[in-house]
Image 1 (tube, protein in one colour):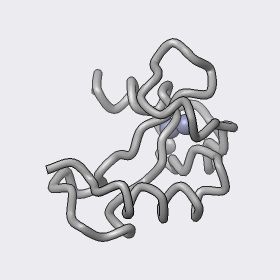
Image 2 (cartoon, rainbow, N blue to C red):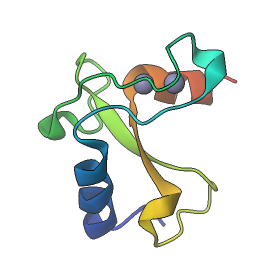
Image 3 (cartoon, rainbow, N blue to C red):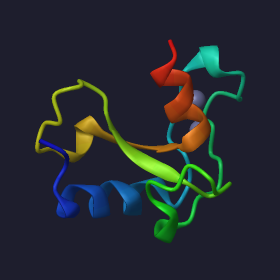
Image 4 (cartoon, rainbow, N blue to C red):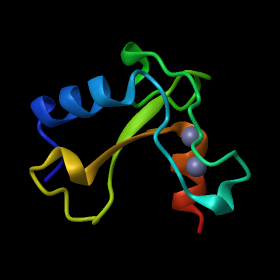
Amino acid sequence: MPFSEYIVKQAWRRSGGRCECIRTTHGHSRTCRKKLLELYRGDDESDYGWEAHSKSGAYLNNIADCEILCWDCMEELRYL
Ligand SMILES: [Zn+2]
Ligand SMILES: [Zn+2]
């Protein structure tokens, strides 16, 4: 089950519209903080694209499990 809109909204607000990735293997600084636009969720063509990623992989109904990631970071995860 994907995250509910409610969870994604909360996580989006927490992120301040920036990528929350802190993975050291991605080549960005400690936190990615790439600027994102809310409208571009799921848009892999846009520089402002992002997606809600489940840290646990289980999509817990919990904003602690939901991180806002820019598309670059999403792709890194996909291919690792
Ligand atoms: Zn990122
Ligand atoms: Zn990253």
